[in-house]
Amino acid sequence: MADVISSKEVQKIAQLARLELTGKEVAQYAEQISAILGYVSQLSEVDTENVKLTSQVTGLSNVLREDVVEVCSNPEALIRMAPEHENNLIKVKAVFDS
Image 1: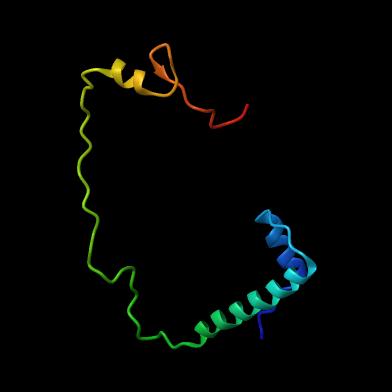
Image 2 (image 1 turned 180 degrees about the vertical axis):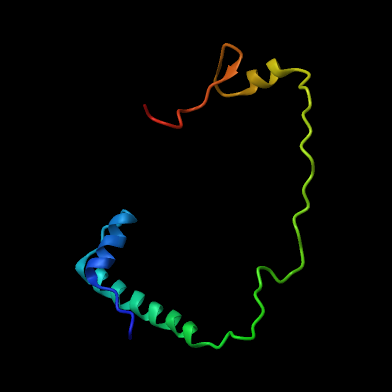
């Protein structure tokens, strides 16, 4: 196996993913990830010289519609249906903490 990942690298990946791994798991994942990287590295040996670049093969494309702004006939009724509202506005949980 040419591409060997170290236990230290597995621990760093686990830390970034906020995973707590045992020593046994670190060793197991280092072996498994190294095997995967070894398998993927075989792709570099494939001759793609005469292979046409492809971004998609189905021929399908997105069908989009134009956005149309419409006036709501009764916005107050919609606001009243919201779980929480205040001053004619819908209240939602904070997205960013200050």
